[in-house]
Amino acid sequence: QVQLVESGGGLVQAGGSLRLSCAVSGRTVSGYVMAWFRQAPGKEREFVAGIRWTSGSTYYANSVKGRFTISRDNAKNMVYLQMNSLKPEDTDVYSCAADVGSPIIYSDPGKYEFWGQGTQVTVSS
Image (cartoon, rainbow, N blue to C red; front, side):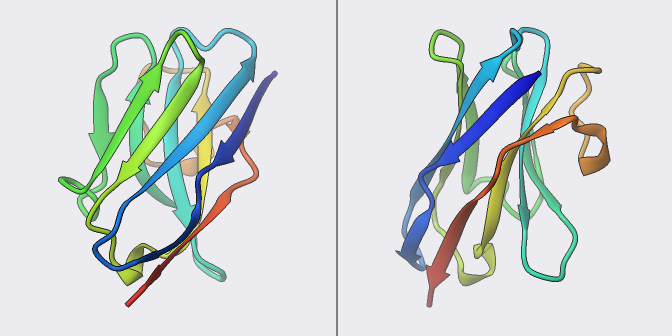
C-alpha cells in the first residue's frame, strides 16, 4: 500500500503562486510514476503533470506547461507541484496519485492505483 497526503492548497490572486506538497509513505516508491490531477465539481479528473520517480523525467498538460513544475525529493519521499502565474481557471481540487505498475506517465487517471484526499486551490480574479 501507498499513502499519499497533500498539503499547500489555498486562496491566491490571479498571477500568484502556490506550492503543493504530497507526502508519500508505505511501500518504496522507487520506480513509480507520481502525478498531479485536478478536478472541479461535476467534471472529470484532469491530468496536470507527472514525474518518473527514479529518473525525474516529467510530462505536463499543455494547459500548465511553462507555468507549473513537478518535482520530487527522494530523501524526503515528497512530490511537489510549483504553480506560478495562476489563473482563475486553475481553481480545482488537486490530488496526488501514484502508478506502481508502469514507468509510463499516463494522463488517464484510471492507470493510477493510489490517491490522496486532495487539496483545494482557489484563484481569484
